[in-house]
Length: 333
Image (cartoon, rainbow, N blue to C red):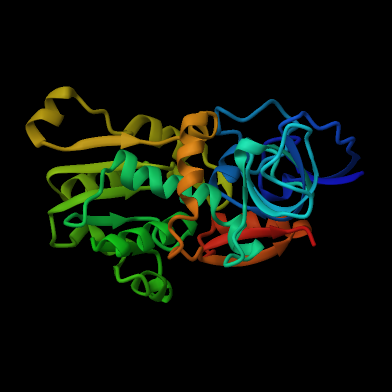
C-alpha cells in the first residue's frame, strides 16, 4: 500500500516539514486496526516538537500527530468489536500525520452517526485534555468561577462547553475582539488577553494557563480566590512567530516562577500541570476517557480551518501566529 506521511527530519520552522511517500505492509498485530485516514488533528504540541522542544518526541525522523479519524481497512485477528468499513477516531502516540495509520484497538472508538469525520478528528486530544484538566485535576463544581486563557482554540471551546453544561461562571481570554463570539456563544464572558491584568475580579476558583510565562503566572495567581487553582497545559511563551526563540526560552527558564511550600501555605492556592501524552500511555486513563467521550453528546467540536495535507506548513504557521479559531485539521482526501 502507498503511504503518504508528513515527517520531521530536522527541527525548524513550518517549512521544515516534509511530505514523503513509502510502501506500507500491513502485517497487523492481533489487536491492531489499519485506518484509511480522512482527517488528522493539529495540536500546538506538534509545533513544539517540530521546534525540538518536546522531550517525549521520538528520535528523528518521525511522523508527528496524536489523532485521526477515518475508515477501517483491515482488522487484527483478535478484534471482535470493530469491523472493516467502520468510521472511527483514534488516538495515536505520534504517527497521526499520515494517510494510513495502524492503531491498537484500545485507542480506537467507533463514531456515532451524529458526528462527522471532521468533528471526530477534533475530539480525542481536545476532549481528553479538557476532561482531565477540569474534572480529574481541577475537580470543578457548578459553583466555581473559571477562566480559560486558550478559550478560542480546540481545547478551550470544549472546556467552555463542559463548563456551560454544569453551570459554572466562566470567562475566556482572546487576543482579538473578533474572536469574542466564539467565547460568548458558550455562555462565557470574553476578555481581551491584555486587559486581564487589570480585571477587577480576584476570586477565580480555577484558571487554565497555556503560556507558562512569568507574566501570565503572576497575573493569574493575583486573580485566584481563597483556595484557587492554577493549571498549566502549555508553554507557548517559548515560541516567537513560529520559531524557537532562544531569547524567550532563556528568559522563560530564568524567570519561570519558583514556588516554595511556604508560599502555598500562606497564600492558599494550588499550582498543577498536565502532560496529556502520559495519559495516552496509561490504559486506565484511556479506558476511562474513551468511555466518556460520547456520553457527553452535547459537545460539538469547534472545527476551524481544514487544510489539505500538502498545506501543513501553512496550517502550522497560522496556528503559531494565533490566526486559528477552533481545531485545525489536515485532510487526506
